Amino acid sequence: MSTSLISKHDLLKHWLGHRNLTRHVLEKFPEDQLFTFKVEKMRTFADLVKELLSLAVPGLHGIVHQEITPYDHDLPYDSKEALLQAWDEATPQIEKLFLQIPEERFHEDYNLFGQYNFPILHNILYFIDNEVHHRGQGFVYLRLLGIEPPFFWER
Figure (cartoon, rainbow, N blue to C red):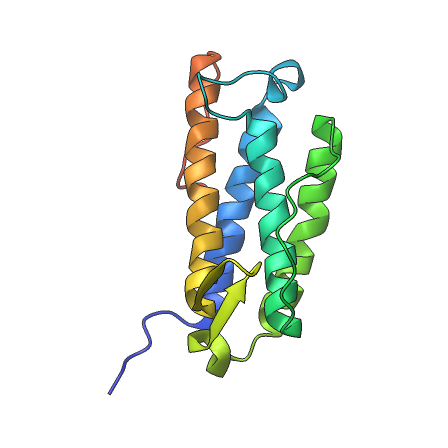
């Protein structure tokens, strides 16, 4: 017998809370540093945000429609305004697509972008974990730039 620890709707709420916090990090980032500031071999925060944008909606779209499309991270956004707009447009798409996945499919294997064959739930957790990881890098960047990041619990 298994016990559900978190509902589908609570998982979505959790993810959207993380997205809200990541958006606040993006808002705090100075535009003149967003596309240029990085530490050693790490990517800029703009590149990290582009990665997050290239994963969530396309990944969920593939899951919902049972299509496997290659990963494409070459997004054209070249300003903070464009990244914020893309972020704001992606969030309702994430919600809509996520809600189309029947709970019964969450344990079904899905080959995300033809590269990562895991249960759908694991792919969704990857989207969330990857965002938290990259947001953490954004927190470090903000601190290095002398900017106080938002509190991590204010989602």
